[in-house]
Length: 206
Image (cartoon, rainbow, N blue to C red; front, side, top):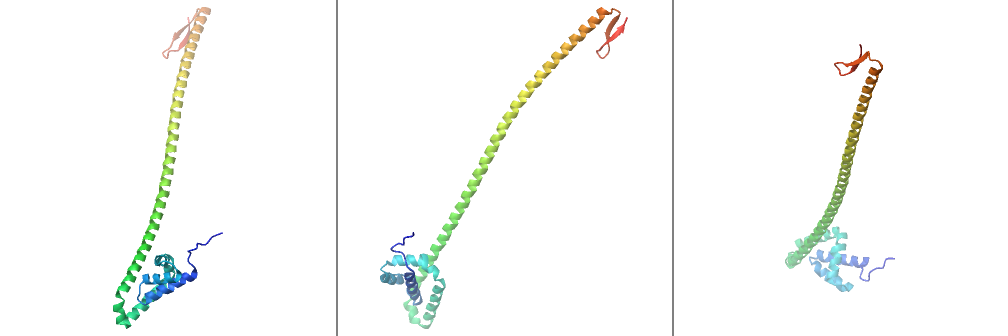
């Protein structure tokens, strides 16, 4: 349940504020005098009335403000004395309007800054995520490289062992061949062996 603030502005109070301010603009008076008049009627300070006008009500009556300015200019054209009496007041109105417009521009600029900072934050978050992804990938590749190096060392050791086993097998086969030749010579003295040009033994009958 929403509880209304005791100092909250009602629709009727906003309407009164708009009517009084527009009348003062139309008559060549200042908005400050309008705020003072409304403040007395509503038992509010002129500062509170000015803040309410600039922050909310004025935005609802842009066309009414333009019409009031136009009517004021028409009155000044038809009444030169009014022009002399209200020059300072008109200048005050212009200053107040420019100040209000400046406040709006600052608000817009602040929104743009917030949007820019939000976008930059999103960019940095994406950049950090990309850095984390690259770091994880680099760590994975580093570990994979270590694993492959260890595997390469193991394969070399296995190859060395196979080569040693092969040489040992060849030596055994060579000894067995020599023993076989010697046994044949003892069993058959007429048969002898000689080595051919390729290094192989061939049987020669005596």
